[in-house]
Amino acid sequence: MSRLASGLQRLRRSSSPWEVLWSALASCGLVLFSQLAVAMVPRLFPSLSLLAMLPIVGLVFLAAIVLGRLWRRFIGVAASAPLFVLFNILLLWGVYVFVIWRETSSLLDILINAECALLLWGLYRILSGDPGIVACDSSYLEEAGCKDFLEAIYSSEKLPMLSRVRQCTWCKANIRGYDHHCPAFGTCIGQKNHRLFMALLTGFVVAESTYTMCSTKYITRCISSGTIRSENPVSLNMVISTMLFSILQVLWQIVFLMWHIYCICFNIKTDEWINWKKYPEFQMKEQPRSVTLVVYNMAHVNPFPTANADSEVKFVNPYDKGMLCNIREFLKPE
Image 1 (cartoon, one colour):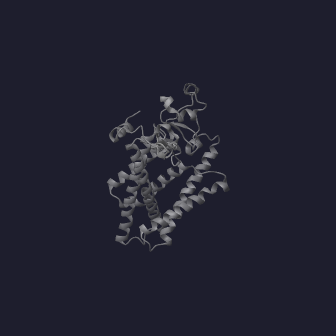
Image 2: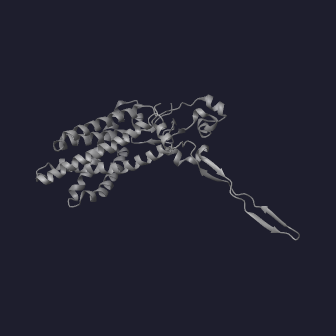
C-alpha cells in the first residue's frame, strides 16, 4: 500500500513508541506556546476592541506556528498536525469546562459538550479510515498498455475501473475520488471519507461558533456585573485568546466550506479543478477559425487559408449531471 506520509499515519508506522510520545509532546507544546502568545495580545493592547485585535492575533498566531516549526531543528522531533488539531480541541473544551460553563445556560452547555465529543469521534474516524486507496495492480498496466500506474491513471478512459483515481502528490497514494490531501487531518480526502470530511468541517464551524458565543456571554457578564477585575487574569486572557482564535478559524473555514459545497454542486474535485489540464477527460479541443487571405493574381483571384494555429484547449466537466443529481450522487452511500 502506498504510504501516507503525515500525521498519525506517520506515527502509526513509527517503530519506537518514544518517537510517538515526543511528537505528541511537541504538538502539545506548540499548542500551548501559540495560545499563550495569543493570550498576550489582550494584555499588551487592552484599549483595542476585540475586532481590532483579530489581525494582530492572526499575525501572532502565525509567527508562533513558524517559530514552533523550528523546534524540529533543535530537538529533532516534528510536531504532528492531527495531534495539533486534537490538542486545540481539548484546550478549547478545557477552557470552557473550567472557566466559561458557569455563565452558560444548560442548553448551551449540553450543546457545546456534545459538539466537542462529536469532533473527537469524527477526528478518530477520519484518521483511522480508508480514503479510498487503490492498490497498484499489474493487470491494469497490461490492459491499458501503460508503463506505470500513473500513466494508466492519466489515460483512465482506457480503463473505466480507474475512473477518477488520482495520485496524491503529497503522499504518493492512489485515491479513488481524490479531492485533496488534508495536512490538518493527516490523510487524503477521497471517495470513502469525503462525506465525513464535510461533516467534520461543518462541525468545526458550528462548535467554534458556539464557543465564541459562550465566551462572549462570559466576557459580557463579567463586564456588566463589575467582576472583571476580580477574575483571574490568566483565565480571562485565555478566554479572550481562545475566542479570537475560534473567530479566525471560523472565518477561513466558512470560505473553505463554501468552496467544497460549490465543488459538490458541480461534481468537481479540488485536484481536478486545479490540475484539469493533466486529465484528458476535462479537455475539449477547439480548432480556431482559419483566416482566409485573398491573393490577387494577374488573371484570377486565388483565395487560400493560412496554416492553422495550435488548437485551443477549453475546460469541460464530463461528470456534471446537474446540481440535484450531483448532490444526490455525493450523498449516496458506498
